Length: 300
Ligand code: TXA
Ligand code: MG
Image (tube, rainbow, N blue to C red):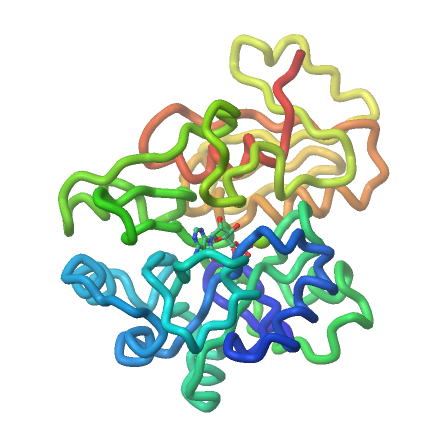
């Protein structure tokens, strides 16, 4: 079953049932080495599925849940190994979406849910995206309208000595550090010297089918938009669609909300290529820049 969250739509199954979780991997074509995030209704229920609940987890959960922050903690035995890809830890979060919360409260358990797309593709931010992507492989889609955040949650590892961000998201490093102090970023994206601790760290991931390239201001003159799509940025309030050019607002939250829908739109148009203007280099843009990097290759 697919359901909305504030970040992206998830494809859910009971995280305590191996057979149900295996079905998710099958439908997504997901490598069994890639662990799945577990969703719960509140802090009390999260504690049931973590073997330890450190002070840091309590503080962060109180500050950011429900919301786009996943906490990686030692897992309780109830969470099946299929969910965590054999890891001794589980990623837990309380999503900030009324439909997801009602579902989780009624179910009163743990729902393992990766994004509701085929593996390596762009995450869905509308119910229609899920249908388009998974077709009859998903029986039920709860339609909660467009996702408000639009990119996947921040994944924070609390199972090691120093907390580490495994995947940046709209709960930023700075926001986390204000609550628990120093946090590391690990490992550097695309650093093949360090085997990924979190498979979401693979460099090209969440990519459209059309060859997609990113460019910065100094390369802008070299981009030929002939037969190609373009996603650029301007000081506007709402996205602007003009044939194969989509202009997104120069605000990280607005940009994040609309980026995946924009990519999908251009991907449907049978273009030669998609060019994406790289957003500015500032901390507020870090999660968005990460998703642009994963969806594209650098312009040669
Ligand atoms: O916003 C989101 O997090 C969405 C919605 C549906 O909640 N879900 C999502 O799930 O993005 P998915 O499967 O696309 O991302 C799962 C990623 C893994 O690739 C890995 O990076 C990290 O979360 N992860 C999950 N469990 C982990 C664990 N035990 N240790 C390390 N990383 C983990
Ligand atoms: Mg995903």
